[in-house]
Image (cartoon, rainbow, N blue to C red; front, side, top):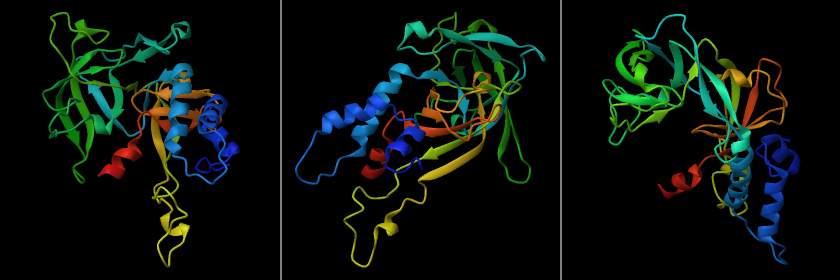
Length: 274
């Protein structure tokens, strides 16, 4: 039942909905000859089903701390978040917001590349469901030079992410409250082979030479929102801006483990074009 394998039990553990698999089978049909089917078609069907049914949540997979220096210490407020924009009946939930947050490391750059609209020194960014913040300073590890904290200020008039003065903020990033975050393990799965067809191998090579060494990455320092503290194995979610994930059978109360079901976009296709 390794989630990288093309077996039904592996697909179940990875979080593939049964309806998505049935839809895929209907689309492929039955052929008399052996065919090679692009797994992207299966993943398309998985996204299509989960987009309609999966609850949206906030999860930071590679965290760095943000301190909002002008936010009152000890204050916590509840922000309203949409559970699923595709399903109005799914309702909303409350997200705790506080002075210290976690954001993705990739959502901050000291020296931003062109067309980078996330958090950088002196630039404003919108926090999903929250406020507009501006980076004022950073704290670095003196030995490695790695950014360990980002110091920001927030505009208290921008709750919900909109500025009353009409100024435009291009970037929106996700976050979790540091004091309410739940530690989680996240298993990031990728294609098992580095080539499309592992049966067509070069001379003096076997399919083992084409096994993708990065087909599984285990992230152990992830921070997820408080609502995920007691998830049950098999529950499915969309981690906003990241992908669809399923609670693994290794999940225990207070220590969730998630498997990547499928990314929001087909990143593999982009890699092959390079």
